[in-house]
Amino acid sequence: MSTPADAGAPGLLVIDPDRPRAPGPRPVVDVAVGVLIDAAGRLLLTTRPPGKAYAGYWEFPGGKIEPGETLEQALRRELQEEIGVTIGAAHPWRVLHADYPHARVCLQVCCVYDWHGALHMHEGQRYAWQTLPVTVAPILPGTVPLLDALAHHPPPHRPR
Image (cartoon, rainbow, N blue to C red; front, side, top):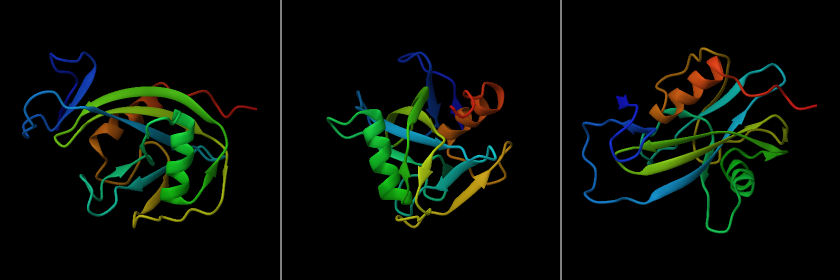
């Protein structure tokens, strides 16, 4: 389903390499991703909304960083819009570059340990609190290396 890199961008995760891409350069979409970790160490995963590429696949919540937004501002906005929570501090953790058939993305991943508000899926998604290894499927290909990193190189524990 994916390969670790292509000749044009070292470290680029190529998703579904056999599927066609538009010819020529494609712009990179910057995406803020939130790994919400509760007090029990569980991770929040949500499904991609109906009508979007890879609809129904499980991923960490987040969305596009708009022009002029910082990573934390974008993550705060996206999590409020998509799942109805207001986050505390966002702790940058990983960056992952992925080439999907429909888009090239730069996933800027933050861990979030504090939030308030009840989860409400505003875009028709489902959600699940998971421990590793996760039991939901299918997993969005760009989320797989993040789950692997969480298992083998976890982020620092909840800040005090």
